[in-house]
Length: 263
Picture 1 (cartoon, rainbow, N blue to C red):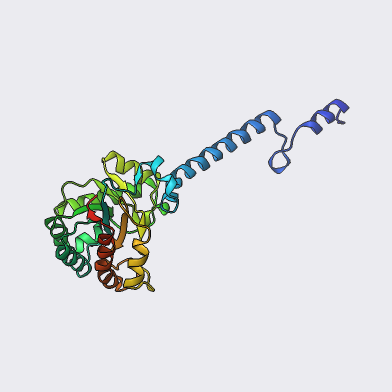
Picture 2 (picture 1 turned 45 degrees about the horizontal axis):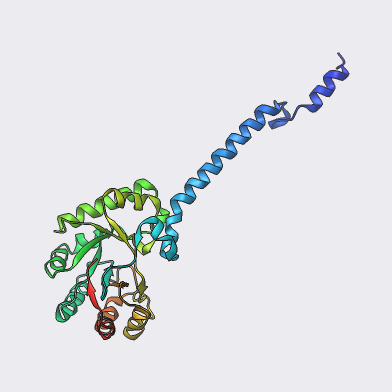
């Protein structure tokens, strides 16, 4: 049977679907639009989730996200240590701080606390503060919300069991948060604190002189200084160079009429 001219024109105008099947134009466009909108929403959600990670490198993003990197007071600065406790590195820092009558803040890692649980009590007994760094030292941009929640919960439980019962400070690994980490910290009423100056003391090329010079360059009242009392996530033995640099850091800041305070 032959096909009519009208039928032929009608079928010619209809769009082809998969395998050459005829599809309705309006329905196809509606479906594609919904898929595009879903993809755009997913992309926007992923961007929002990862965007806080830029705060570590781009300081102007910190204040809008309620991330701190300064302390108040006319002549104070904050000395902070990450990645411990370490069986030799942490006592070395504590000894020098005690000798100088200085105070600091230690952001500790859950898995390291489980290896050296007694050091948390020693930090607190010496008058320093303890904050949460993480349970396992991983880049949070590679973790989903559930993984972040589990990591923080386990870190909190471990650190509190070791004797730190008034946790209120948080610093994400590598200084790179994501949206879940910030939300979970805020829910716990923790202050998220990064730093204004670092000495790159975890690098293999670092020396006591380079650490002190880089850390104190431009530092003044209100600065938050970053060092590491452990070498688990940096160059082996790096804590020794940090311990040697610490007196030079304290001397440099003292010459500027400044004294270290806890966060």
